[in-house]
Length: 210
Image 1 (cartoon, rainbow, N blue to C red):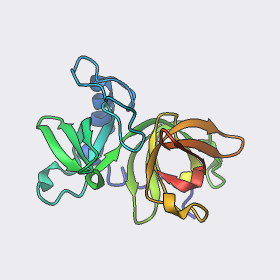
Image 2: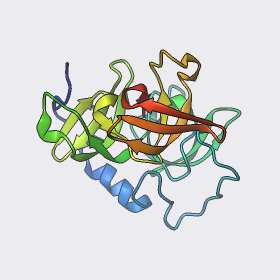
Image 3: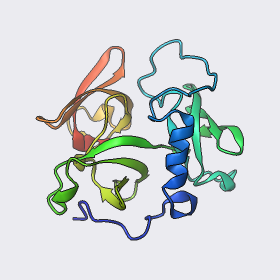
Image 4: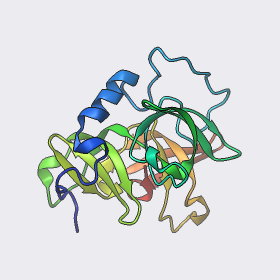
């Protein structure tokens, strides 16, 4: 088990292998990934969309085939078209583009490392989730000067994070759906996740991905 194994170098970290670009982006655009857009104007959503990244969420662009030059660049969500499952994203030094949800990976600040047995010194430290490896089902998190490849059970996402459900054996119909974390119960290792205004689930830490 890789657990909290530090990754060599930046582990595929975009922008030249430095956290400076990411930290700079967070600083310029208002800090927290679920926060506001600072001085930039945007329309507020008319209703709560629990299953989509909110405007102001910082993202990494991935696996775009039509415009590969956009891959590994950072942007900020401006809006979401539910019917098309596409986001309007303001790309740094480029402009606004429309991207499929599969090409958008959110960046999450203040994730907390939890329950690592192989590297207990990282437990309860906070970091930045900067990518997700779907093949390995692991999140890549920058903590201090290290980069960790972590299973979801070893990460506590902050309230307000939009996550995708996976690996549910009961309620399999919910696998693949996205919702927003509204409560975190560290004692039970569970999130309260709203999929919609009328759908609320209690989900184990291990059954979500960013």
